[in-house]
Image (tube, rainbow, N blue to C red; front, side, top):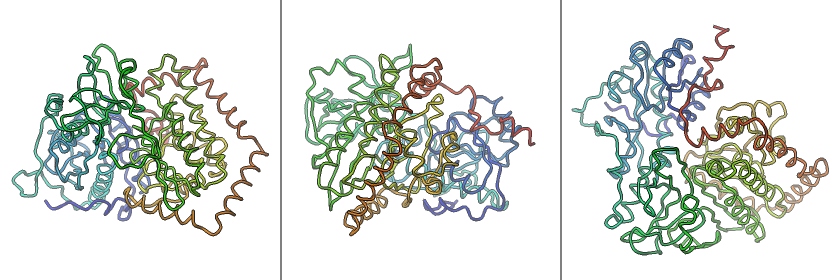
Length: 592
């Protein structure tokens, strides 16, 4: 059963495909893994379409319409109908090593402190996760939240494994390997779903590492059910605190969006909470937003963004300076930026811009660079329309500060994925570099035909050809770094992993800061901004965009508010959007 390859060995390799395949993606949602596979397989020339796994009837209908060569299931929560898997080869991507079976695969791997984990591509049959094996990949585990592992190691391992499986499928000679627990290299085992009882925290006994492990293993979904102020909440977004202490279980401090809770041997920060409410839907919110008035007596443990990172603690904005370069980090949960976060980030940016650095690097976070405005906090606000307006204006203030920087050169270093306003925030920088495997969603329309702002009508034409702009904004599909470079959205891409990417960015930034033509570059930048301002003032772009956004927020068409509600509450799909389900589009069926 020795069919395991090293990660990255085929992740960028499209060679060897005899002919393009017709592949139907059957998935619970178009998540980051499905998007990464869509980008990669489109790049390899395959014909793709997506059907959300809503019910058996719709799945069978989708298969009949598209008549695929192969069905790929990157993210499922139910079994594929027997009427489908008996007639078609259905490859299921399971986030576990060979032999691992059952849901909560990555949760158990984190909880059990496994040093190595993996992804298996197996063929669907009558038993969940028990089909013949087409490919597998392994990777070393990191001590981090489940969502972080999934977006990095799992996605890259799955991409490599799927490409291997497709090569083998097209060869016509490969025979998938039956799962055999008697084999010595099968280390995975069946497991039950992880329940909240398995995740329960005992604040009077569990040490900091144990608590972090439990919350990490539940991050993203479903969270760890716990009690605060006699009410039930799901806990997310935890990190350790090395200096603050207190009575175990008590809240001992707050900082911006997070609260600090004492443990038996230290403390942990909790960034996000979701109220447990069985009678109505609830939202995942910043901890200080969720608890609000209950934290009136809790002391503020403030920290400035430029503080030296000598202690382990919570910070969502910080910066470092070295060799004439300022590195501004902003690691916002899920890439969402609310009004206050935008203002704090702008303040930090202006502070570093007032220093003697020559280059400012906008580092973002490792999971996400930015995804724009904070839809959960907008939905939770007393007036979502008013909070939408405040949030987009705060984003615009930040973008304007970057555009008008006249003493430094700026770099957007896209280490994590970016979407909507986050993509256009990056365009405010002078140079844009991306990690090779990131995913960009440079559009707003999926959120109820939102028009968008962040000065995109000024920034986008500076980089993208006029004949490409409309299709880019209307296209609701993700794009990869190579495609973004071809369009002009980014200057270059390199390195699959964050460590190597950071090293390259440092070299680029320091070379730029020390270049002999630095003064000339600054002069050229100022002259271009002045010429652009004379042609059309920056404020005019903002005003025009906001007039369209005002209609989205306050107009008669409620599409934005409906789409936002469905998004933040994760309302189950009733159908697959037509831009994904190309087999259901009228023009597709006319050509058959």
